[in-house]
Image 1 (cartoon, one colour):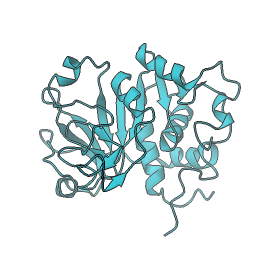
Image 2 (cartoon, helix red, strand yellow):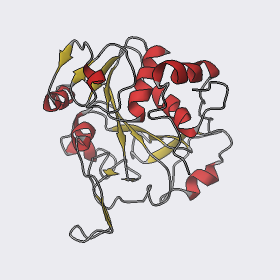
Image 3 (cartoon, rainbow, N blue to C red):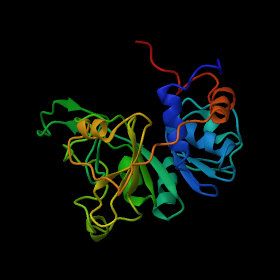
Image 4 (cartoon, rainbow, N blue to C red):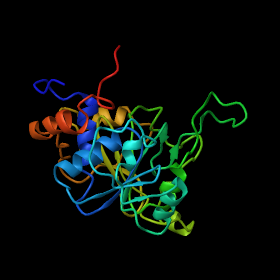
Amino acid sequence: MKTDTPANPLETLAYIISQQIKDHSVVYVGTGLPMVAAILARKTHAPNITIVYESGGQDPISGDMPWSVGCPLTWRKSAVLMEMAYSFGQAYNGYIDIAFLGFAQVDMYGNVNTHMIGNDFLNPKARLTGSGGNNDLSSLTENMILVGLQTPERFPEKVDFITSVGHLKGGKSRQEAGLLGNGPVAVISQWGIYDFEPETKRMRVKSLTPGIPFDIAQQTTGFELLKPDGTIPETDLITPESLDILRTEVDPHGVFTTMPAM
């Protein structure tokens, strides 16, 4: 893969996701960009993380990019290989520090919908993939990062169906419902990174992609975004060094970082 061309949006997103991973943490990884991000983090700023794949592979040695969590490369010489149910049990028992979740819709409190679009469960506008392990992770993992494209339809004030719980109705409602962990701590989109205001648990701008004003982020959101005091920081973009590692060592065949042909 050429290393002298600018980063594409998928490569940039993978880098931003990787920056949410701290060294010495246990990272729960699903198929797609989270795999790229976790491997990139290990090869750059977080060499001591433990990668737990959704299918049960525990910290395999480095190799080619797996094509999914079901790929044999996710358990290549792993220290432990568990069934998927046991990997979710790790989250329940507090052994997972951070996990990543995609969405069809996410609301102002970080509740996620991957079930259906529309208000009629028996006759939806669109039937989606459902939960898989999403609800397990959102209910049990210590820290959850949500990742997806930002449009008014994808960022509604209220999701059409709660597949995976975030902060429910805000405030302390998540804890009062008996759910574990901190819930979603960040949302990453093409426009920026968002966190949640500590008291209300409302989605708040943390940083914006360079060149993107707050008005653009707000216009592509179906609810009022909260803003931090003062100037909104810019999101750090991928460095040349990290881009070279991503293209030559992490995903050299572009399994998950090649832009779809138009």
